Image (cartoon, rainbow, N blue to C red; front, side):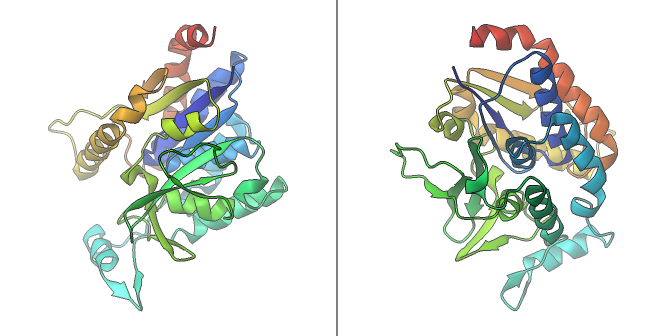
Length: 284
């Protein structure tokens, strides 16, 4: 029996996935195959590289400000810059260079460099904005590919994570060879199908509940609800093919709301503990 875990995107809330992994480990539940989109890919890749849930949380706390925090210039100015071009390049709030370099360093620490160097089966989706096609960064190309999905293995771990996390208008598109990649959540926010293709007999999908909007909500709250609705809608078919969906409520944590990292970690942990008997049942 091989257990797969498919982790959704969700900005800084993605640290909740580390809480999920911590709860599973405490209950001696081994994850054999892992995949994630955007922030889910960030967690999935760290775990596949051998970092513990506790260490993943420490890494987030250490690097979040440098990697995730956007510039302080007005948002509307940043969006205008993103929509423009300079010498053929898109400009956004962040280039993504910090995220990529951080992952290159973290991979090197464990003697890794490229996706193919990782032993644990790993899948990370991204979308090429030039041809509107989904690509999967992975260390193992499935033997059967009836859907003619496009796979890339010869890419650095840092570039793969950066590509899948290139959220429109926040991060610039990520160039790789002839491709220009955007956040994988555009087409596949919870990669259940790809995790199954890697040989998982059972797959647990982890996504985020869309927060309610009320009179206290601000523009970022509305943006996050829109993202969650879109992401869950896009992933309906994929989610329905999972064996269990863990939906985490994170109480209006914004896309880049760094101050809520610890509470998000706890939300992921507590949600998993509440459902631990269901998880054990599907594995029985």
